[in-house]
Length: 285
Image 1 (cartoon, helix red, strand yellow):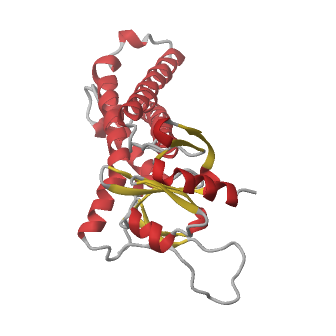
Image 2 (tube, helix red, strand yellow; image 1 turned 180 degrees about the horizontal axis):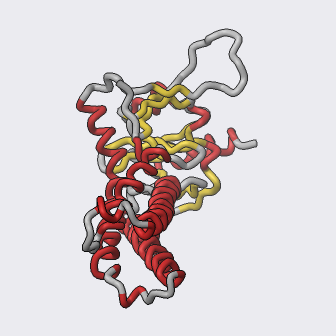
């Protein structure tokens, strides 16, 4: 059975919004749902709630995906948490309040004289907080389930060339994890690899991070060609195209400037500094 993150499907998010909107619409109502279903006011409120809720869900989903691509949790926990709170929670709350105010204003009603701030808005505050938590945790939970099942029944996604291959030839491919799916990358797609909290992370040239079960030693010796990749230190391997500059440090060490963000130090030891310079200079151009 194929495992997938249903939250990435618009139709699934739409169903959740439609169900939750019924509950939000009925918060604070003195009449039963059966009675309200026979009134026009219910459908006006329900449609407005669906539109507002769908806008917020899509905003939180988009924000979380953008943050995952631009600023991962690996090595940036506090900064990522701050942005998640500001962009994924506080901003949607402000937009919800603004849209709800416009809705009541359209009916010549002051929102501060309604029960919305006592019943509806506190629920929305909690709902958006839970929505952020669900969007963040679901991929990790699915990945954990996959590991517990020993990778059985998981979809394997292969990245294939754009042009058809006339003959299948053996090539080095590196298995990585993208959420709950297994993905195979070619060495030329990789910008660097590093260790964070005991796990090996591979970053491709689009700056997306993947998990891998391989060690840096295995990547260095068996998968990443030495003419393209260099072992900067025990925590980092980088490709030549990711090295933009370097500067000397004390005791003969050098610090490498990379074109990709990495949460580990980029210092080359004195013993390897000369080798790195030769590797970089000989392979440039």
